[in-house]
Length: 65
Image (cartoon, rainbow, N blue to C red; front, side, top):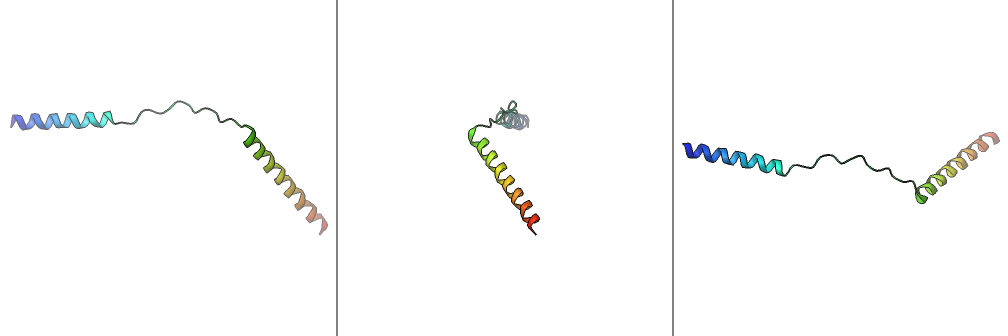
């Protein structure tokens, strides 16, 4: 009986320690800021120009009617 208890205790400790060893690392530090470089800036400018053109065209159509 004593040997069975010792085996079960050892097995339990090994299983708990193996689960702790495979745990995920902590959270990373704060993410670095994403730079807005040429490509993203040009895309934003093109989107703004397109929206301006659409809104200006919509206003001129409503004035014609």
